[in-house]
Length: 600
Ligand code: M6R
Image 1 (spheres, protein in one colour):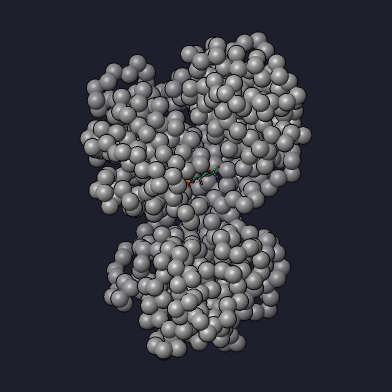
Image 2 (image 1 turned 120 degrees about the horizontal axis):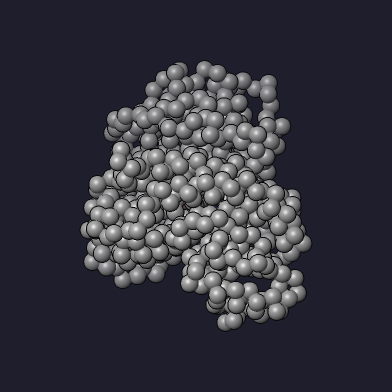
C-alpha cells in the first residue's frame, strides 16, 4: 500500500527510482510519480495508473543525481494526477512523498495554513506546506522538518527534498514502514528492501518518530529533538532472483508452485540434529506460561489463524481465540490472566495488527509474531518471532504464506504438546514431508483445475464454497482467493448454516464447491451437497482419499487429517488463479487491493 523510493548519489536517478517503483508495484497503487532535482530546479512527473505510463512521461533528457518517487494507493482524494505524489509547497521549494494517513489534517490546515491555497485533496500536501510555513520563520530546513514531523498525528513515512539543497533527503516515519539503504557513494530510501535490492543489501532501520538526513556518503539519524542516534546496519537476506517471475506468467502461479519447497525449507529450519522440532526456548516457555493464546491477524493470515487454533487446541490442549485485527480494539474480549498474543502476518506491516500489538504491549502482555519478514515492524516490536521462510511473496493474493503459516503453527502446536509431555501418535516432520509431496502432485495437475475453473467460473456472477470443521476454514480462504482476483462474488459457508438462510441464494447453475477432508463430517457435508444440487446448483466435490465417493470431482491424496488444509487449499488457489485468468483479470495486481495494508 503506497511505496516510496529515494536516491542520492552520483549517477542519474531516474532509472533507480522507476525500477524501485516497479519493484513496489506489488504493494498496490493507482497513481505514481517521481521528482528529480538538479541545478535547474525540481522536475516533477506524475500519472494516474501504471508505472509504465510514468516511464513514458518521464523526460529522458533530464539528468539528476537525486530524487524521490512514489506509488499512491488513494486514501484522501480520488486517484488522479493532481492527487498523485510528489506534492510541492506553494513556492515549489519543497517536494514530498508520503505513505500513511495524517489524522490531524484539518487541525494543521486550520491552524497553520489559513493563507495557503492547497492544490490537491490529499492529507500529504499539508505536510509540505507546513514545512514551508515553518521554514519561512526558522530559516532552518532540518529544524522545520523536525518541527513539522512533531506536529503530525497518524501514520507516515516521508521523504522530502529541497530545491535549494542537492545534498540531502529528509526522511521520517511513524507506523508506516521505511528503510534507508546504504551504498558506496550513494544512499537510498525505500518502503521495503525489495525496491532497492538491485543497488544494495545493506540497510538501516528507522524507528518511529525519528528523522533521518540522508546524504550521498552519510546518513544521520536524529530524535525529534535533533539528538544524533547511532544504529548498526544489517544485511537484507533476500536473493534478488526471488523477486523475479522467471518463466512464469504471474507471480501467483510461481508462488503456488513454490509451496512444496517452502514446506521442506520450514522442516529444515525447524529441525534439530536428532530430527526433532527445534524452536526457540523462550517461545516454548511463553507458550507454556500462557493460559490462553490470542491470535490476531487479517485476511488470509486470519484464515491461517483459524486453522492454527484447531492445531494448538487439539494437539497442545491450550485454549485459543482468533480475532480479526481491525475488530479487536473495538470489541476487546475479556482477557485471561496470562494471555500470549500471536500476530500472524505475511508482511509484518499490517497496520490493524500493529495497533493491537501496541495496545497489548501497553497492557504488558507478551507477543509472538509469525511473519515472512523478520525485520518488519510486527517482528521488531514483538517479544519473539517465528520466521515463515517462504521467500518474498509478491502477488497480492497470498498463497505460499498461508501454507507456511499453517505449517509453522503446526510446529508450534507440536512443540508445545511435546514440552507438556503430551504423547502424539505421529511424527509431525515426517507428516509435513508427506504434505510437501502431495502438494507437488497437485501443482503437477494444473490442467485439471484449469478445466474446472473454465467450467465453473467463466460465466458466473457468484459462487459458494462449503465445508465443515477444518474444511470450513479452508473454504473461507478459497472464497477470498476467488473474489479478490477474479471479482466473482464468492462466499465460504459452514455446510450446516446453509439451511439457515444462504440456501435461498441457490439458483439454477449456481456453482457450489464442497470440500470434504474430515471423516467426522463427511456424511453431513455430502447431505449439504445434495440439498443445493436439488435446488439447481452446479456442484463440485473435492474430497480426501479414504472419504471419497464415486461422483467426486477430485480426490486429494491422503495426508494427516489435521494437516489437510495445507493440501486442500492448493486446488482452491489454482481454481481462483485460472478463473481470474479466463476472465482477463490482472492476477497479480487486482483492482483496489494493496499487498501490505499499512493504514488502519
Ligand atoms: O501481511 P498480512 O499477512 O498481515 O496481510 C493480511 C491481509 O491483508 C492479506 O492476507 C490479504 O487478505 C491477502 N490479499 C489475501 O490474499
